[in-house]
Image (cartoon, rainbow, N blue to C red; front, side, top):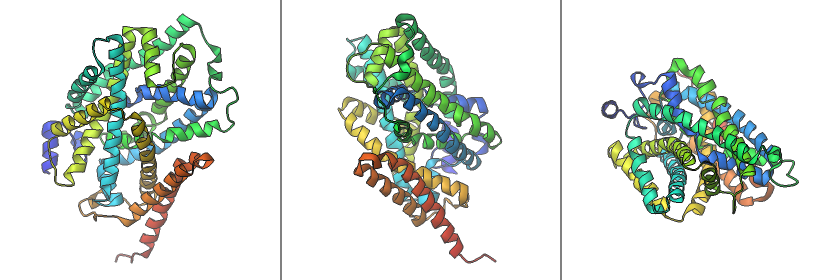
Length: 440
């Protein structure tokens, strides 16, 4: 109750407390807050990168399959989160035990920090490019200094309004960039042939699996969906957290990325910086506004979820502090990583953590669809839940082994991780229930 009282006073809902009915959000407010996640330069770049490696048509097929899979999975996760009001941290306690859940929370907030580093660096690079006198370290500091205060208001009373205002800037900027490219360079019908001269027949599968590397969005969904009203579950599950959202996030962004990169002349290897440079070259100061809007929107989610889950993680070890303190801590870590030359290491870390995340989703789905989940069992949860931990680590171990094996096997690492984690959780839970004596 103390934590709940604190959340009501500050306008925050800690990850260690279920969201009460009084703190639930209306449809439009939650939609505006959540749709901040769709506008990241990362989605524009990943579509172009996959097209470059596997062919534009294969990339588009992979995007379509990802829209379907993400929509179906998140429909289940979001409806459960709305019914229960639980966060990822609380639900992980039920799955893995109070201590076993700590690894899930650690992976969650560290991944959110990694994405904050990437997306923040995009703004800093753009600022430094247009205004060379503003050195990159100062530009990075400026980005962090304005990003932290943005998440001090609650999801219910601030982030929905901020992202509602920035949504037209993002959508209009994306369409304007494509339109300006056509006006300046003419329509390029060969954009669908962008990539290798003879793309692999199974390239679409590799593209689909690549999008499984960002299943951390499933955990993002869970922590946002808990603010929804149970009576709005059908709307949110179908529209807000469902396929329409991912059609914009993956398909619209990805297709725009493929077209822009294939039609705008750029130098060097394709990466986030080269795409940003192309947009700035095309749009000038308006391009900077577009980059700022896209990256600021996604970073409200990155900073917010990193802060809440870092707070929950360290409170488990008796290290307590205010939401403001942990928000500042996230900002300091993000700034340090933005200055360090660690991007290659972060990408490797994200690849490995992605396997853990896919396994978490498999366990969560099995428990929601086939298990008996009672939110009132959180307080009495054991330190370790052997069923959930066996399923989670079993699926993860298989995924890591396939990644290390390389070759064609690596492309099955994420899908088989999720399937095995689901099967183990379902089978072990069913066996445990069958072995329990019937209550009288």
